[in-house]
Image (cartoon, rainbow over all chains, first blue to last red; front, side, top):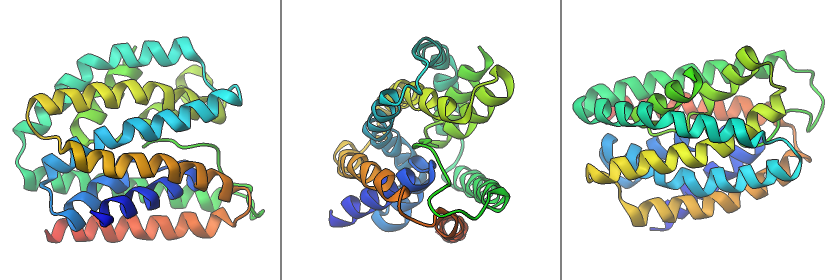
Length: 133
Length: 111
């Protein structure tokens, strides 16, 4: 139980620090540390992301960074995609899904490294808010 | 809008927020600035992840207590992280995080 809280805090802190976080850390954490299946981990991660994204969005909104109508439009349109994605995830085997997810986070890691090396080395200059990725 | 559908698909399939899809597309296709893209993406994700979690819940895959035990502290962690961001060498942290991601990928494959 304590592990869950620790995973949460670590993921949150890294998310706030880097503008990337959420599911990317939750899913492996839930599988490796808590022992959930890939499917359960992904599903549970989605629930965990809601408060994180909410806090991030409210913070960003205070800085005037949220275009509300666009956000709403994206959210509403996403429903079809979500149904499709979840259906697809539940059809795939755990092993396949796990492999796909591992590849995904490798891609994200590569993207992160590329982005970091492109920046000027000024302390604290890096990123914006949480991306909830 | 293609962005919404793509993000929804991504989120539903992988259990992530979808920001990795939304932010670059907002910047590339709609000419958003990075900060606005991040902020708007987050707002959209609250909805997308919520719907996705509900749909997954219907399949019986959601461990609600676990989700809350991870998510609520994480929300607090985000505030701490944003505070720290103003005071730290984000570069080293980014690279460390990338390393954590790579090792997670490897660990996942070993399960």
